[in-house]
Image 1 (cartoon, rainbow, N blue to C red):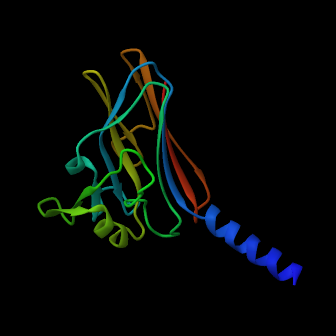
Image 2: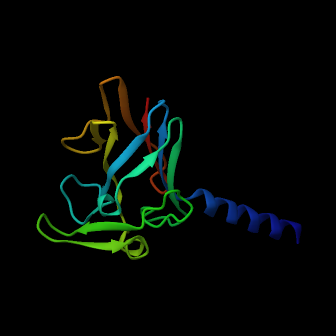
Image 3: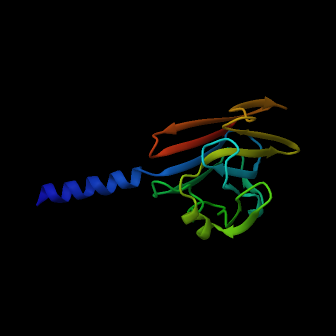
Length: 165
């Protein structure tokens, strides 16, 4: 009986660990604003893409952090109710000319195979775009701050980490 309970607890613990996570760390004394967080299928230029911009900017206080997480193995954490502030709406672009704004709960089931693509960050009037794929660098430095992106985790439980310093 003890072995069955131990195996059940181990299985539950493994499920809690297997998740997609987006983390942003603000290691500066400035407020950082996320103007847009973009996902795609992992292929540069591919559709569908999801943009957080319809939600409006998300601000991260000095020396603060922001995390989006889901226990689902295949979906990007579009719906992450424990994140503060919560991103409540996303724009889903199915082509360069066709998009709709949908709620995070509607975006979540449509988010199969979506991965981090790029993010637009702002401190004051200075904006940077970092990410993966063609046209985006993983590290940019100017005007006294650096934004960098580093993937970690595993293929089944990726962790997308953006650090501002």
